Image (cartoon, rainbow, N blue to C red; front, side, top):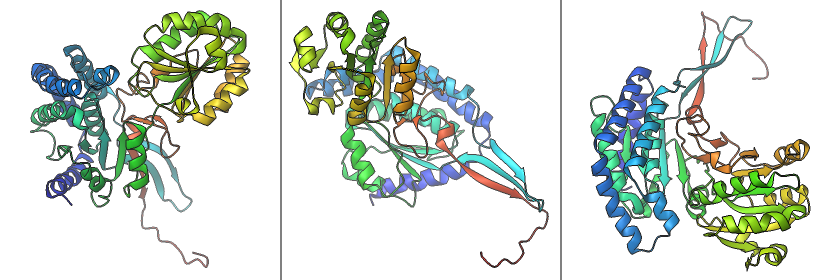
Length: 417
């Protein structure tokens, strides 16, 4: 193993043992220090980010991806506010989830505890660096961060600021950043079972699938986001248009933005021309019916299976809500789906039939976010079923432990165990 990486992992492992017993007030003090330091050093962060942005332009990174990478003063304030929000949230560590007393007098409690060391592998968004560090800290976990090369200068500065702000509060190793950009380091991290308790990949489908297929450390699979919006025949079309614009255009580079819009045939003639006007800067790919109504590039099966993260959208006209559901089952990554309808029975059918982590009725998929769910921030959006689904907040970053209080009880001899 890379010598520097092993040193960092050992440090994180030791830190996790100390964080496990850290009082809530101390963790909150560290979070407040981080939040204040981000504001105090915002100009340094922006200068570091300029280096990453310059490189992004040199390599012709898409505009949408550049937007993910950009750190402005306003965004730094937003990240700082997010850290302060995490500090105000209830500490999950030590929460008694349930308890009971056995006939022999044993008192058993199921108690929430930190998982230990999180290894996080992610791509261009530097705000993730702070979000994850703050969530790990509040939940009593150490974190080993491996951001993408796109944000290396910004991430270095952010971690430097966080570590300096908390050097007298947190144990060394509580926040570690891997700065080695060779992809081989990822392979070492995802096999570091001796030191790392869980790996969380955040990024494109290629990164996520590489980690899922190759890791020996347990993985929480976060979602590539092929998200869908279905406009039903009983939809309020003004509402549908507003939601479609928000879900696709507000920030197309994020995983909770929609990639495909399904439109019921009974409203397609009326809705699609209005959608085309509103989607002036969006490249539209449509099926035969869509092309006949508004004229656009023809969609392919590969298009439906693509996470664009850009100003590109697929449109398909369907005959029923059942057809919409079948399409989503075929192409969804089980992240987020939404139905726009004023028919509650249709909405219930849609929401109860789908297997995605987040299912909406008359709302934008852009709310699939830890902050919007009231979690302060998020570790990621889990699209798997174990051990957690959807936005991963503080509670989802913990495991549990059984604590048993006795008074001298011993187990008698049994024949079957």
